[in-house]
Length: 73
Image (cartoon, rainbow, N blue to C red):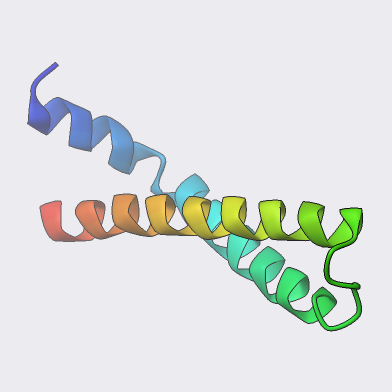
């Protein structure tokens, strides 16, 4: 698959990528707010940090994909 076809296939799902970007941003905000209530060192804190790292990664990947779509078109 050449680069043009790959980017075209990626950009066809731009609306879904926008949705994932917004959901991950809201999730990051909620998780950051919950860190104020969770006790450091507890199992809940560990789960919150894992989720936070996951959503930050998802946000970065989705943002990069949307940036590619905007620059490509």
